[in-house]
Amino acid sequence: MTEYTTVSIPKDLAARVEETIEGTSFQSTSDLVRFLLRSIVIQHQKTGELTEAEFEEITEQLKGLGYLE
Picture 1: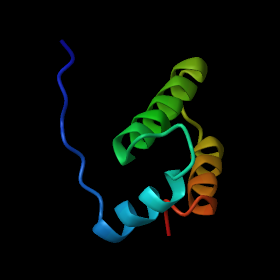
Picture 2: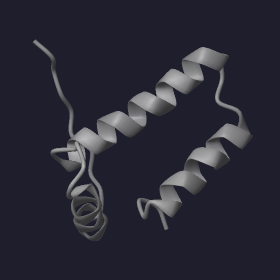
Picture 3: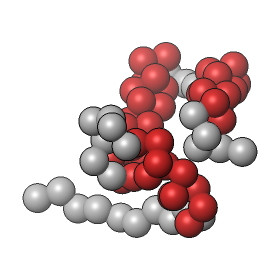
């Protein structure tokens, strides 16, 4: 059985995420967060490290999607 932990985000961000995932395959904010974190971890594991440029690219993508300010 998979064990889980809790991650806290501001309520205004959670509301924006809920609006953003409407009509997508993501069923919840948790689904999206798992997807994003998994993507970052996979990228890190492929290269052995996450470069500053890769981190900045991910940050800009998340900003563009409205997940970061």
